Amino acid sequence: MTKILISKIAFLFLALAIFVSACQETDHEIAPVDETLVSPEVSAQFASLGFNPIDIEKVGENYLVGGDIIVTPKALENMKEAIVVGGPSGEQYRTYNLVSAPRVITVKGRSLSSTVSNALNLAIANYNNENLGITFQRVSRGRADITLRETGSSAGGVAGFPEGDGDPYPSITIYGGTSSYGLDVVKHVITHELGHCIGLRHTDWFDRSFSCSPPYDGVEAANPEGAVHIPGTNQSFDANSVMNSCFNSASTGVFSAGDKTALDYLY
Image (cartoon, rainbow, N blue to C red; front, side, top):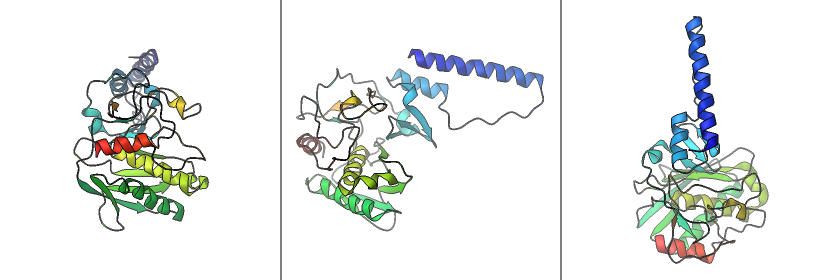
């Protein structure tokens, strides 16, 4: 448990003690619990697995880790022991959970701009051109395995990892400001988030400063999803990987040789 976490928990317990004392002295109605806060128990659980609790946010019923990865309560319950990787000893990385193959993964767009809609088609083609055991298929009606939404005005996207039932993570959010970077960049972001949905981790999870500028640099923890080296991939940092943490205006959405090797090995 980190010093920061201990301080946070101590503060929360102090605040709770004051609140209980106040309740004993008055008949005022008890204030509702702020459901957007991460509980001390959950913070401690993430910290015990190597995460910095400062990087954990509550989003509805789920937790947002590292800015673009959703961890569901179910995934948190299925945590495993950490796999220790001493820095950039191998690229690329996967989570403990993958998608069952062979299978067709259906993808549906909801309320998409023309740029994001076209980029989704190109991102799907990225994967299908690799002749993998999984095939992405865009659908317009009915239930889909993955639903992609566009919202907000910032740039980037967010998705999650498979939960261990053989299915991909079911949703991707692309922020509306991403379109201002152009079609190739949006294709890059969607390709990246689809990678998370099928179990790929950030290539530079061990040091995000390789692709990001402050305040987004730093180390991501291996758990609770795991950071498992994919055999056959590069033994040094892959600057061209689609799965690096951050993108820029020159990102193309084209798989690097390491990305292709990883996908071929897994699927």
